[in-house]
Length: 157
Image (cartoon, rainbow, N blue to C red):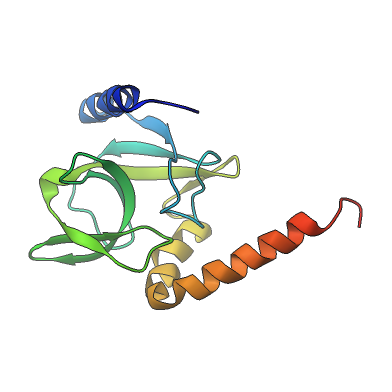
């Protein structure tokens, strides 16, 4: 899906308006920061208004100070704000303040199947994957090599 900056702003504006009114909106995943849990162009998220202070492991849509909207997971909560981290990253971003947090992710569609926040896959990324933050690059490299080997094997082999 190709969308220009103005179109993306309008799209995000519609999402924010609907969730602020209590609705649930679906949005495709853009970018690679939430890999390997969520993949650009393949997966999507269901967003709702954030009615409570986000907790460690929850995924939020937030607005950076430069105006960019980003989907990241809460890594740590402190008195100064939230520190957020994409699932493919090792350096947290923050502090992010409450007014920057726009929506909470209620569910994800991964490989065509919907997963709620209580699913085993979600719980793995919410807990174990967060603990593995310092060594994520090793796991991501292993996943990339595995994927590359699968691509080289001809069908039926």
